[in-house]
Length: 243
Image (tube, rainbow, N blue to C red; front, top):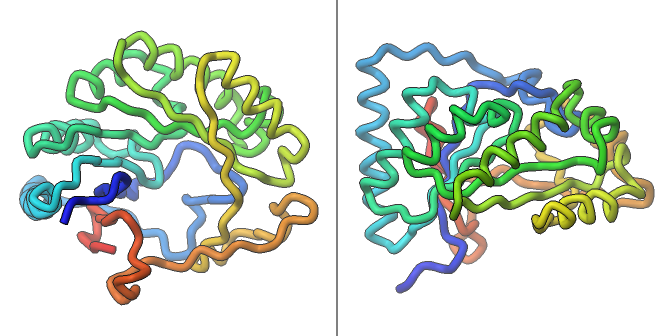
């Protein structure tokens, strides 16, 4: 059976985040754990992850998506090693899902692109710094995002996908946000806020746009019925759990 168009392997790097988005607050998660592995332990993890890559490649999966928390917070050698491993194992679409803050430095973008990243998924939460930075709660994050876009574009053939999120903080400004990205020649998807059942530290009611109904996002695990299974396999590189 051939894979669905969107099938992918999603790798989570849970090393924290360098912004503090109102809807996520990843560094404040009540079940947050610090990871301090030895080099030998990391080698074991990467061997297991390579085996998972090979299983999915045999099934025809070609997309490798690197997320988190924020993947650029992972040790540089680890992130680059995973990218190169993905290339070697035959993944043809390798996407970094980032907030863009660290990508304001061209050297990091160059390193990732040379290693094999050929697509970037970036968020924009408003048409200006005031709106975007209010959501990320990090001053300068909007300027960093624009710088990141410029850096990525300096490497021909590298894809950029933008998305925004409907929130109370940006209600009434979604159209401006999308138009602003279009003015840069970028498409921008609009996502609705989904409430993760494990994120009990987030006040979702205060974040919903006026008139919006709650949209719950269930935790995905191996017990989900096959006919309702998601179109991805998620692997947490620190806990070695597969979802």
